[in-house]
Image (tube, rainbow, N blue to C red; front, top):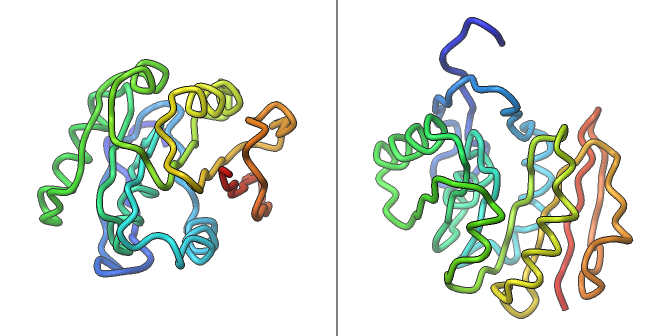
Length: 187
């Protein structure tokens, strides 16, 4: 990865299926693999249309862009890297997507802001930082989850899901290589 300024990712389903977009080659940015995204969005198929989504630690934007491509009503992209946010703004401009919001800053600080309730949240921080449990609990405490919201968490196998909010039930989980991922439903 060193020495490259840009990487390319492909949207795998929906209205923009097959479209490729570039994202910056920055430290700790690890896009969700195609087969993981395909499985996740198969799980979310019954609820993605019209959903208000939050892509925390958005990185390449693969999850939020995939959600938009498949009919999400709105996606908020959150990342603390300016290159990442600038690249996503350009990608959304090229795709003609105006139902997006961008927040340049830390996910923790974003969760303290006022924002509309969300139906689907993607939590995929850099694995090295082990932030999944902290962010999940901050999200729950924020009061911004809609009734019966869905929460996707990606990790490296080190997640202790007993430390996640009690109101979250694990709906599905899988492992693909080094990627462990699960979908939870808030009740």
